[in-house]
Image (cartoon, rainbow, N blue to C red; front, top):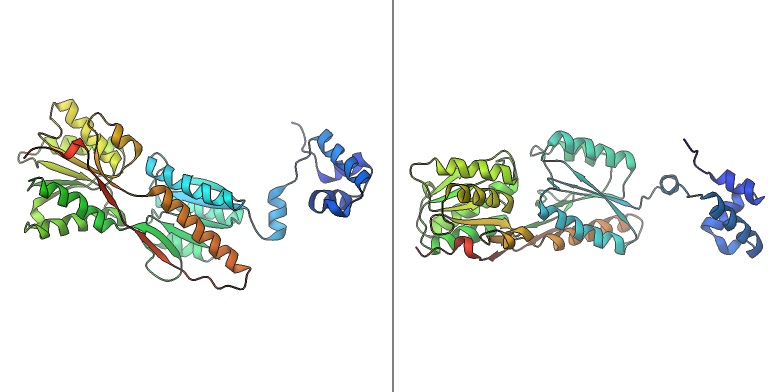
Amino acid sequence: MAQSVGIKDVARAAGVSVGTVSNVINRPDTVASETRARVLSAIDRLGYVRSESARQLRAGRSRIMGLLVLDMGNPFFVDVARGAERAARESGLGVMVCNSAQSPAEEADYLSLFAEQRVRGVLLTPADATGRNIAAFRRHGIPFVLVDRVAEGATECSVSVDDVAGGALAVRHLVDAGHRSIAYVSGPPELNQVRDRRTGALNALAEAGLGPDALRELPTERLDVAAGRDAGARLLGLSDRPTAVFCANDLLALGVLQAMYAAGVGVPDDLAIVGYDDIEFAAAAAVPLTSVRQPAVTMGALAAGLLLEETEAESGPVRHEHRRVVLQPELVVRRSSLSGR
């Protein structure tokens, strides 16, 4: 195995001190042009790459921002990462993206990794409903911003979408189309987003004079297409099948759509479907999917901006004020919910 080239190797090859090599790398204007050229030639010839991590540890300031999301298989979180990466890059930072896979244990492992790497800060969509992982991470003193989750206290910033309003948009649309029995494919009940979207759905039913029994909840263990297909199979087995279904995200909705297609159930004539997130695949589905749009890229960019603002305030005279940014969702109507009831 080839050994890495160190700063001492460069100094030896150029016939100068280690301090001179360091000056060429960090303060080139302080080194005579002839010496600087000799050192740069040695660096090029040997293929030396300075240890950025070591430099950052000495300076106590990393150029890496951590991003921990629930599911990188979900295009919604890919868009969040795109927004965060764009904002970080504009400030000269990189983003380390990790996937908790909706597992509190994996979330805890990644938060420990971020602490070990002394990242500049962390953008986090929590998987642990108890808050224990966040409490443990807070002890490291590393700033973090919650994404797609509202901060409950005043100890951190958050960027989220009003999921109660989003759930109401979805179900109000279905009620206005004439549906009086609606299924909610909800995902893991411990997730705040799932609960808030259900609350919004119930609010819309109450506005229409309908009771909570008008909403049939079908929980799933995960928020993916396979879980949606399983929920679709359960829906098909109901003797009093609802005429419409609202899904907690688009992947679930696409899975339900696949199950209906395989069973010969017409969408939207036999079953109207509304998803949530408005991922790119929603518009491209066999039956274009009505969905509640979340501005995912904007969420990622705003969260990264808040984190950068907080970390800059740590070394500056301006005190950082924690903020909760709540964005508004938008209903995007497509053919999957346009049945003529």
